Length: 251
Ligand code: PGA
Image 1 (cartoon, rainbow, N blue to C red):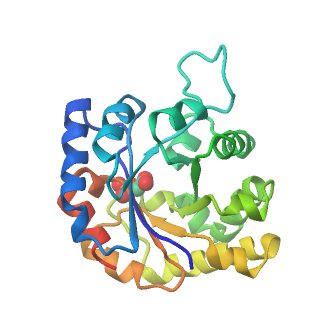
Image 2 (cartoon, rainbow, N blue to C red):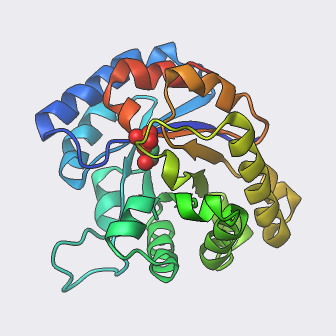
């Protein structure tokens, strides 16, 4: 049985004290969420250490938003996977479209990052998704397929146990435009098939595939009701504990 996950991606928001307060508010309300829904919060690097203290021993898991594509050494400004593990991260997001768009994140780099994350005991939330131009040109299946193949096909069925996929159509991120439940389900089912083609039906069946892009309390229920949507990666709405928890309660 695959896990249901609702993950908050704080992006570059909140100061450390604000982030600690937000994490405390999420922890305080976490008992209002069904026990089979895993809560994850992904914070900026600066916040990980104090937020790890807040979530320690609770049902809330900690994630980074990125990690380096090298193990260690002369890479000024980067943060390595083993550093994230040492601070108490259970997950790291990789390949978010904002990183692909603004920070030259390529699929090749994502292979390296994923290898290092897994080698250091982190679980990976790998983001894929098409931009508006690609969607309008009808290329959304091809784009997602190649992103999945270029990264995940380098890994094993065993590795897949620690990999979550997040489908995030770029045109829906932070725009208020959500993919309809049908649009999202269509791609989720397709992604599961691309995973099955390489790793077999059981691995595909066990892989958690999250939807991200303007997911909010008012639309989460319909999205999460879809057969192949196993939760959400939440940006803006994760910055308010009530909204984040309300989304997780949509199950
Ligand atoms: P959004 O962001 O919920 O603000 O659209 C989602 C994401 O980028 O992970």
